Image (cartoon, rainbow, N blue to C red; front, side):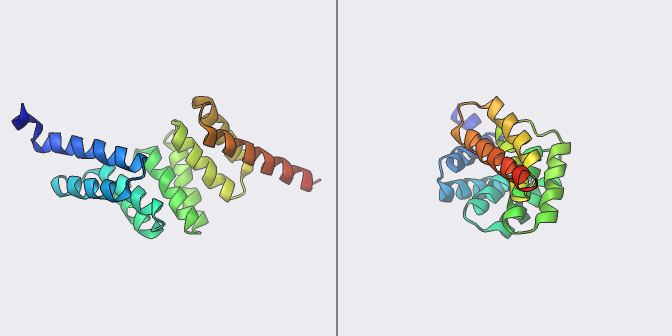
Length: 169
């Protein structure tokens, strides 16, 4: 049994799961190390590139994150969440036109999970498109009503949308 678990495919699977769990709990050094080890086995593992990009994004190293997420997209351009997080990194780097292009690609690909929808909502909110942000936040909050962050983003965007509507009269 141990010999089966140490095959490269099993190692890739174990490291991938570890990187996801480490990133989710904020263990950035461990997540980056798991991604590095995984990429040493499979240099074309798109999700490892994406997860490593997320580590860099969390650390504020936005252009390194962009480079890694773009590499992941070059391998798996069909993943809406890759485009959404690319959009977020570009927006945080004040590259708004490129961010909105990436967000639109994510929307075209059919962003459907709550985290991706919330990420896109944040991109549109930063671009002051609170109408689109509200739609995305509402969808995310419907999918995960127990998530306080999604509820907060929805409320904040509704408030900004209403403030903008009131100030335009």
